Length: 369
Image 1 (cartoon, one colour):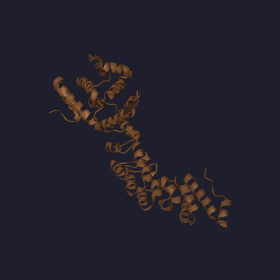
Image 2: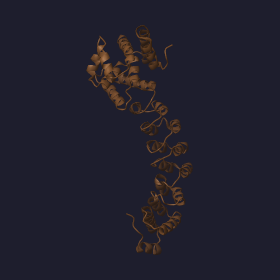
Image 3: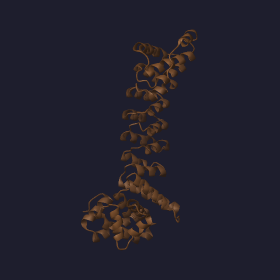
Image 4: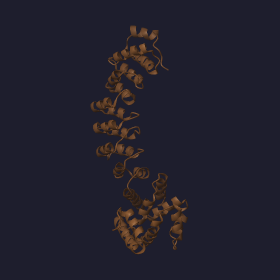
């Protein structure tokens, strides 16, 4: 609770006007002002005191004033701006907390002051889109931009994020907190996937919207890394299962994604995904999916509530994947290309035109001619 100035305080100011006593008085007056306990007349007097104290030669006096007034919405704009443009010790509390300062005030300060001031502004509870853009434009310190990326109260437009990636995309200090923001535009997420670590990449694919092609590229890259690192390891599917779980938890385990994975040769992902969506053990899913009579595949497919139009193509894709199992360790791009070619050839002969066109649309994004 704020303390009122008493007779002893006044006496000390009159007889011993030291910096320490002036700082103590500044703190008490500003705390009373912020608490709203002063009358209208007393408030006017307090404002006049503040105008004098912001010019005090001692930094500790101005620092005490700034610290005590940082959360006050009733101080004059003149006093707030004076404190915000002071030396770092004085300006920091106002720059980070004062709502009296306007965006125009803060933009001017960002342009004229150094990294410490910019970082304080980047830490504010609410940072407007224009203010955030100004910070990115004017700061040359990655730590400042990293602070902005960590701040969920900062409104970051797609264009601003693009500027961040242009300037600091290769810097983990910046790209990691950006990747971990709750919302990212698709274009930003897809640029980030090529800049961040594997762990952060997994977070991106499971928490942010991306094109199907990007998601599949990421999954295939993860699979190839795991194959290289865990060959002959019985636990090689554990990482894939965890990724499937994450995709499911975040609503990203879609029929399209699963279908594309299968048609590009990723049977393990297909099996794990169907087991997850059908809520059955992976062993059961494997037996149903690879049932020679297709009844098992149809049953698990229906339990996943997938489109019946794709079932004939899925059956063909499974057959082709078995035929090409021996060449699965070949060049990945060549293997996928051959996989798609064989499925297309087989579908032309065995699948009705409507299903075939749907297949083409899902794989390459265009209708069959």
